[in-house]
Length: 186
Ligand code: IMP
Ligand code: MG
Image 1 (cartoon, helix red, strand yellow):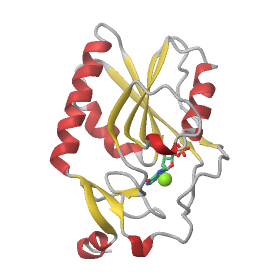
Image 2: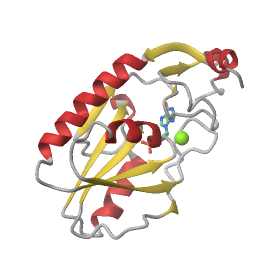
Image 3: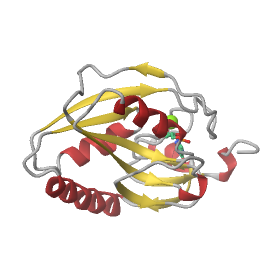
Image 4: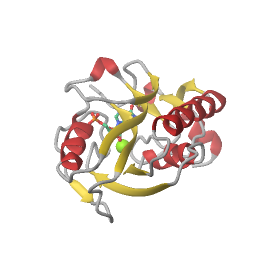
């Protein structure tokens, strides 16, 4: 796909590059203050969080490490199956570490809720969640998210790491998936 084809997948730009980067800097400053004097471990949820995590980490002024987990979510569809499976586990032991889970988006909350319970059982010193986006209207289960970039309406979004059938992650902004591409009943 070239840039024109990529952009045809976008119905509207929801959050442009400047707003994204400005908000990420605010989050980074807040995290830097909250964890002052501590060492942080950022745990990224593959694959969507990679882009946000890379930018966020560069705004955090603390010693920090990263690791990644992959869990199954939607595949090519646009609604949650509720089935969560670990596809790739962490490389390091998080016992006694200050862990900040980095997510691209929280929709039903099912994926994150499973992940938080799983990580808590490994006895970290602390565990919190930072999500770039959240769709409060879609929440099916209560999850405690300490840092949120933006609350967005109930629309399927793409770009800045977010995919539709693995495409569009490379858009530098967050856009709404074009109606023409939206699957029936989603
Ligand atoms: P949840 O378990 O329903 O909260 O789903 C979370 C995961 O679903 C996210 O990490 C995304 O991978 C995916 N997801 C949810 N909403 C969207 C969206 O609007 N665009 C792209 N991916 C989404
Ligand atoms: Mg996805």
